[in-house]
Picture (cartoon, one colour):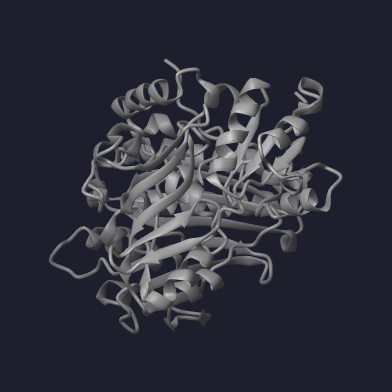
Length: 492
């Protein structure tokens, strides 16, 4: 559906509503090309909207939305543009509402709270907070956008201590589909809306969030960095990962400052599989805490760990961009047998890709992260409000591993070849986990493919609440009807 066909005078209506002409970008403009090119993944930039709108305030958005609704114009909402799959934050022949100019971060030393606008990127957030000696539990990759991560849950370097990123939000500014601005949505003012925004708010299911207020953490130094190891360490490395994950849930051990992200992947520079591990100690203990020592004793090809800061890490930990990306996710029991099977299936994937794609033209990631059972118990948020909507407390019943399965290729033809292979890889791992009683239902929204049923994985009670809140705050179903991308609330 083309907005120019549906509503020939849409641009005039937007101008009348107070959006400056300089913030309305047409396909022939340099600004349009620049914003399209700024998406992290080529997949996400592939939809071609009829217009890109770049509002500079919540007030402008509140006037834009009624225009889009009255003209039945389909739209997408973009924060940082880091979601992978097409139509998650962009739209073909509709309007993309680009929040990139809502990108300020301020700190109140009296309340020790940070106010962060939705279009910010995490490297910008940490840069603004660093002079105050504080951080927020936010994204680990600097180019990730604030809005998408916080509304999808958000795994951070501080999750083991502070819960998911969304658990540290104490207030939201939200614009409803009729243009009404709800400032300061808290667990006291709007407890139902407040809760569902903690994990199910992506893709504008309930409203458009323009800013977040978050609790902060005193933090000036951390220790960590990337370690590259040969693939020969994989058996011992997986054993170390199992023990690390179980140890995180043990209150007798001070391990919750340590982070271990294990990535087995095909490296195009060496044209072979290697193990890239991100190790971090957020307490700034040089050399890491006791829980990391087993991993650190394994063979290394390169060690880039150092005393640093969250800001510096966010600037350095940058994933390859401008690729056709396929992401799938899965959660399973922290079981050596499943990890070994997943790693073996990744090896088969690489062998299949090499038959069609030159070795230097693709990357893969078999990325493992600990999700111990106690993470669900951290959902009683730092705001003192209700738990988040993620449902981990009911769906992740044992210490578990979060898998991100990735391919990054250079052409659309290569993506078409790789996509079904990655999908089958994850399906096979799920089937194997089920066969030994190790499957877990929960899916992490930010890592999921568009075909995966993420919100259903939060549990039936949480889905019911999402439907109720949607009907209450968007009674006409505008977001379900006109903002179709991403993960929508399942219908009854």
